[in-house]
Image (tube, helix red, strand yellow):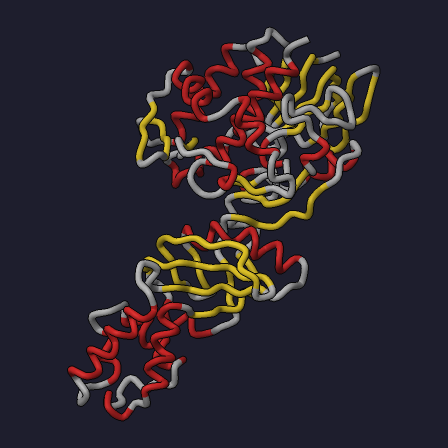
Length: 407
């Protein structure tokens, strides 16, 4: 055998697995199809690498097998991750629960991982694409474009489909299927959403605090509050990212998907209506658009007024009460029809993947095939924004590498 353990994928989970196995004294080969390992790590946290979060809860991770993620994190969670990186030399900075390297540079995390793989003598093959995996002599034969290698155990860490420019092109799913595993349909997650309504373009460039509620066939499935970004194609920003995986699932199933935007999440509609009435009564001879000057962004309220049937240059007292009331309702709940997401090209993570019911949560080993492990984004687990997807990579990578390295 060329190696005791072959790891396919040199991202966060693959690097963690390689180091965990290497520390057990195993001969490890790490295969990466890009020209260098860990490229996607450099893009995390806007280049600052938000590598985990002190707040951990089952609601921070999504999966068709909802109990699976937290069981994994109970075995290797944020405390273990922090200690692990501190032992590699990282000084950890915490900001409102978000964990970063003190340098605020993703390269710091990647560099300590690369240094440790070198110290352990882990052999790294870059610019190598795995085309096929076959069982061979109580182990596996891995077919690459330029060579074939054999190993006793395989850890599949090939990632999902998000950010293909960093090497995640979905090829790992084909390898998993070829080895007997089932794939939960995949969609982009943590990405912007495109809407049917053309008026969003008139609000492009605006950032505002808002609550975003996502409905599938008129049923509320997810909600988040944060800074909403209005764009030419629709909506973006953290609250949109958090609900986007559900939008993707709904669209995949050809269902009606809508988002409701609440521009005043900290106030009741009656409070908004009362303030609007106050302004109307105080300035009946002013232009209608002047009634919202001190209430919200002009780009937004001009669109909402038009949707409510109110002309911006109309005299306040000439506008019927029912139209003002309609405007008030839009301020608390503007409905948008979601027609698509921004796709895998801009998505931060993939929702869907290898069915975790086929994976042992204590070891990350396949229940279908001995000595085969699957980790990271390849699995049907996606985290919310805030370092959770990297935590998932560290947790699954360590557990798999540690177990595979123990005979």
